[in-house]
Image (tube, rainbow, N blue to C red; front, top):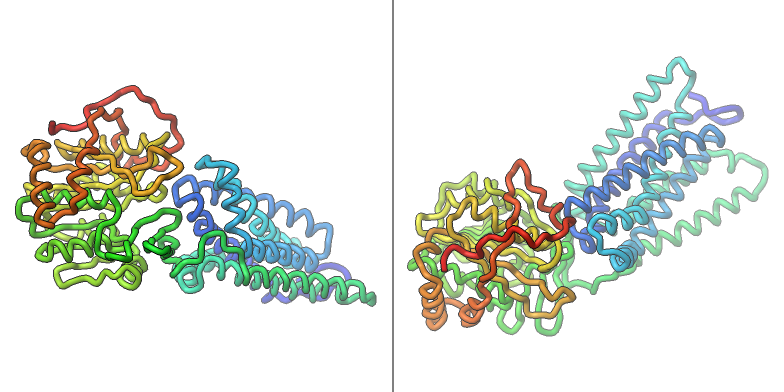
Length: 530
């Protein structure tokens, strides 16, 4: 292999190693980008679409730029500058990525363009630089035009293997071991080290002038300074009691004087009152457990979605004879509930670390009550919103069983369409559905924000609302339900629901609904049991 007149031969091994590493770092940054954006913009289809689109645009332009530049400058110099600049930007990303995203979110709350703008500013520069590395490597690798295809094929193959290593290594191992920002800092350091190596092989160090040497040392000192910034990064969010990146989400545990909070990505999932860790503090949870009033003698329940273990703790204390299966897809959430939220499963509670649908397919058990608490406003697994899913849920209900679904919503714009879609889909499976809109305990910027609870099942056809309220009152008087549940029955929705979209496994554009305008036409009845 030759590089040009007056240049020493480039090591074939170093060329391939550079291709491998640059391909790995690009894909690692793309995976990490989703974790950077999630606490601010969520983890929706829009976020992933923005992230992938921005990275692809940066890569395509980087390929073109790298090819153009490598025809005009010595290949080692091109590689050095591309790697050093992309590594320096990666250090900046680790240092100030969070505050930049919050600034972008303050500029626009559009679910499409907000993450596009943030990804463009934070991730496009390193993706651009790293993509320019490949054509520069090809320029160095080509010995003669007769073997162009062989060299190009080998280099692209190695770069693609690097992309695979970066994807699997980050997603399966490194992210959980190191955390998002620490791993970004390491990636910046890897790029800088590789850039310095190529800088040392370039013509700058083989001239008689000391100016390039001093310039290189000055540049290196600046990059070391950026590395220091990456270590002492800016934290936009309050310092947590605990923070980790699981394979599914970023998990944070925060404290104030009265409460402990579990935050998954950008959504609060549990609140524990320190004075009484078992009490159900959130109003929606106080009404959520009222589903027990529909079944005279419940013996077995299923809870899909664990969070901080608030429901499971309360059931263990208040309904100690109820056998409970708890299903949670993220093992880190299960550990956090035990370590930080004082949930220690009693013998009659069975914890299953599994996806909800996978669990339902794997069990033949039937339940008196099924609680579905897997929907956050910014993080909704679409496969748990479809007609097929609710059909599986109904198949695991006892004949007189009841299911209750919690859906957090802003009460505005596309969130109202998502509420209607869940109601419409539930009604394709259950003949009777009642809904309640429960406000949270704190004021928010969105006055319509609430938890919509959907109760469904045969008992809703057999009981009048007054009979149900009487049962709730009796259980509350005996300490079997929170006293607040009786007052929360007044949140029952009376007005008709607008006609929603029935969601299926084949067509469930759940994330896309937030981008649509709300049409107040096409109303359907609010409930079937009056």
